[in-house]
Length: 81
Image (cartoon, rainbow, N blue to C red; front, top):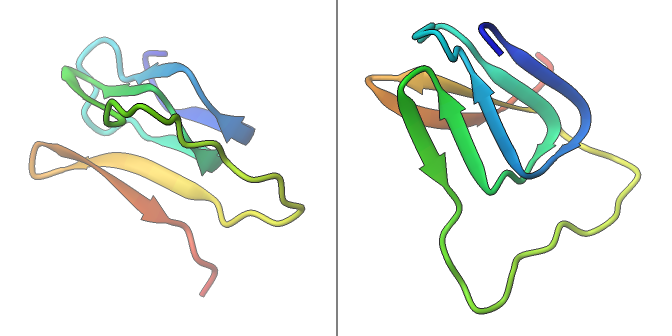
């Protein structure tokens, strides 16, 4: 996406926000569990492991947001205040 990505559920796989260089783009989901996450020209991926980490099924989520801070992708929990 050229801008933000919002998923009303579990985000898995690969997501690329700000694909035209938009460093203000954000990725939001009820749970972030991507294999690879890209924002603008930066990317991160979950560590390689022999045992894949699975997300447990639950009826409650705390939304998460990934954005660029100081040229790094940082994931924040979106707490209500």
